[in-house]
Length: 111
Image 1: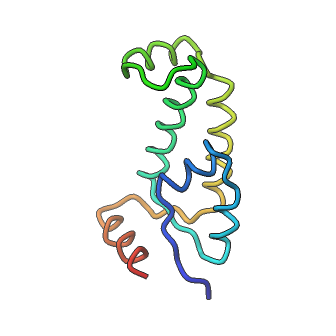
Image 2: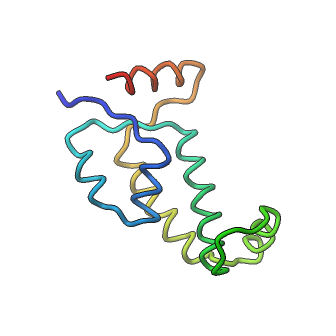
Image 3: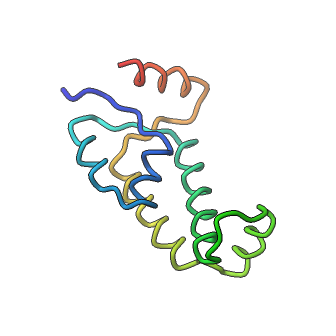
């Protein structure tokens, strides 16, 4: 039986934003778990990063990002990256959202 490993937002973003496929290869020996919260945070950061990349800036006010997103700035990049996120999600065990999620994720991390 494979050991369990909790995949957090930083891992997902390394794979998607930095195209670090090697990270997935390193983790292939584990049973990979994540949470709905991690997927939501990853999706949000993908949107923000994609809009910033399309604007060719590193920082901008969050309201400006929202405005540009609503106008479709970076939409192709966002779509591609969210598609990859959905694919990754299909390969992970997503911990059900309930009051025990935090305790379960801590147990996985301890191992």
